[in-house]
Length: 81
Image 1 (tube, rainbow, N blue to C red):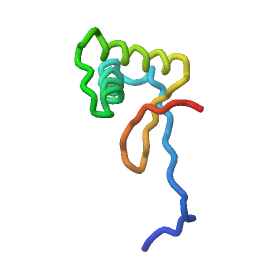
Image 2: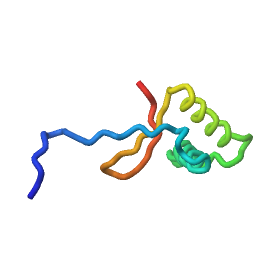
Image 3: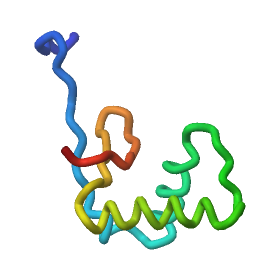
Image 4: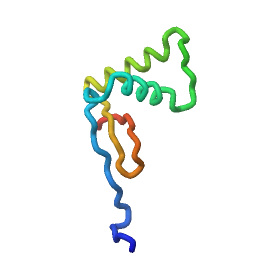
C-alpha cells in the first residue's frame, strides 16, 4: 500500500558535521563539489586547490554545511541561509 503524504512534502536532509568526516572523504567531496558544473580546474595556477580552500573556509565559518539526504542517499555541500 502507498503511504499518504501531503502534496509537496519532502524529506529534509540531515546535517553532518564536516569535522566528523574522514579528511580524505571531505577532500574528495569538496573537489567533486567545486568541479560539479563540468569545469575541469585541474592544477592551472592552483585553481582547484584555491576553490577547495574557499569551500573549506566556508565550512569552518558555518557559511556552508554538509547535508545527507535520506531519500537519495547522497551527501551534498550547501550554503547556509
